[in-house]
Length: 261
Image: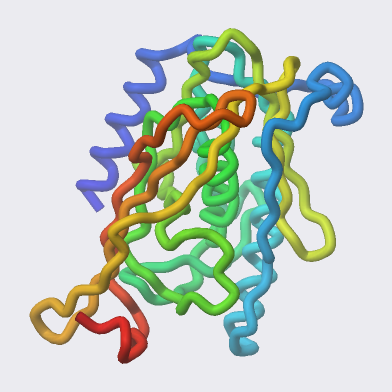
């Protein structure tokens, strides 16, 4: 606990040092903001519920309630040129006094009930969308555990961002000349979001993985590895590719026989 308190204090000092550099949420209504930022750069949605046990389903309901609170703090954020987006600075500490409930949170790879649990679904969404824009990711923490098999997976393994208040943050930087708008909402049991801009974006990105493999470590522990790249296109012409993330996660399920190393 002393270590966590120290890390949190360091983050607080970091926020003070960069005071005035962070993006803020607009007070304007959503439709008014859409008019000011008419161009959708990238949008995505993810399912809110998994087919789990009754007990875990109750935690998932808490997760959705927690997301509803956090969305109000994040949706409508305007990221001006030269400004920084900080996930936790916008949301704040997700405590019971603020209305947060016990939701599903992974601790050492196992689902447990924690107040404010489930907010990684929001950081995952924002990170994935950001990879498809000209915004820069300056801080992102990978998940240490791969909990669920690839059934119905539509994104590469390791394409999310875990967050723990406040020392594991998701931070973005706008190095472009145009402001961006982040909108997030819940619709039809899906968490939805989009980055919007004042100008149409000529750049397009495709995200994919390379060097995906599974290793058998000491104690018959399986670890999954990959590297996430993105291809860059300008006016649909290929420009190049870049490495955006490297992942190493302990598997919490038995890998398929043909995938074993």
